Structure formats: C-alpha cells, structure tokens
Image (tube, rainbow, N blue to C red; front, side, top):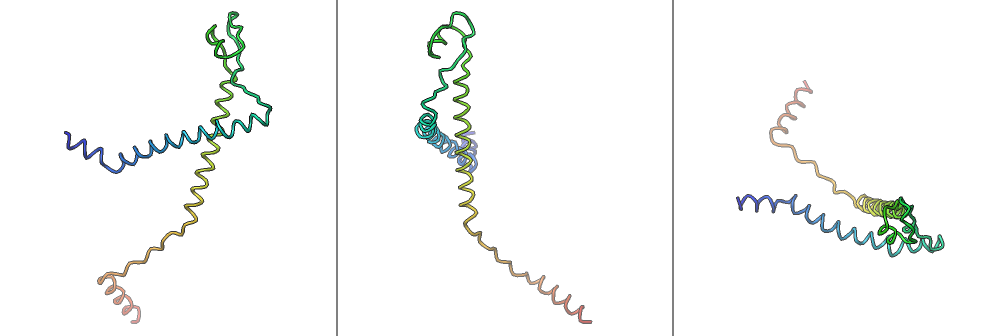
Amino acid sequence: MLKEFKQFAMRGNVVDLAIGVVIGAAFGKIIESLVADVIMPVIGAVTGGLDFSNYFIGLSSAVNALTLAEARKQGAVLAWGNFLTVSMNFLIIAFVLFLAVRGLNRLKRAEPEPVAETPKPTRSETLLEEIRDLMAKR
C-alpha cells in the first residue's frame, strides 16, 4: 500500500498541482498587497480618503457605536460598507489578474512555434506511389 501511495504522490499531475497551489497562494499575497498597499491608497487619495469599511446600519436599538468593530459588540449590524470594500477589492484583483493573464498570453503568442517537418514516407508508401504513377501513365 505504501508503494502505491508513493506512485500516486509522485505522478506528474499531483506534483504539478501542489506546485501550482503553492505558487498561487504566493501570487495571491502579492495581489492582495498590490491592492491594499498601492491601488487602494491611490483611490483613497483621489476620493479624499473615503473609507467605506465603517459604514453600517444597526439592526437593533442597542447599537449606537460609531465604528463597525464597536457596533458588532453591541448587537447585529448590516455592514454594507465592508461588503462594498471587499467587492471593490475583488473587482480590482480580478482586473489585475486579467491583465496578468492577458500579458502572459501575448508573450506566449510572440514566440514562434517550431515548424514540424513532414515525415519521410515509408518504403511501402513509396512503392504504392510508384504503382499509382505507373497506372496513371497507362
């Protein structure tokens, strides 16, 4: 059973998938940092520091806090600002990934594909062609 597991684990697809997951997680952190540290501050500067993450609606009369964290301690809240912020982050991340994949596809297309040589005909194919040519002459 151990031998079978080793064969399964060392097959190309499993190893490739594991490498893809690790690289994907690392790339995800890069994209999150790009959004949080580069893009969102620029958007914040353009909109005058507008931050939606603390916008909420209290769902009970006991909620009277000014920040979302404090309001959640007091009772149920509808955190629509946080949802809006997360949705904007998703759209930005999806757009950046779209641009990255698009750029990679263009680089891939820029490389010329090697032209496959046509294989030489076998001896039997050559003989059949000669027979065909002789019959056509008659």
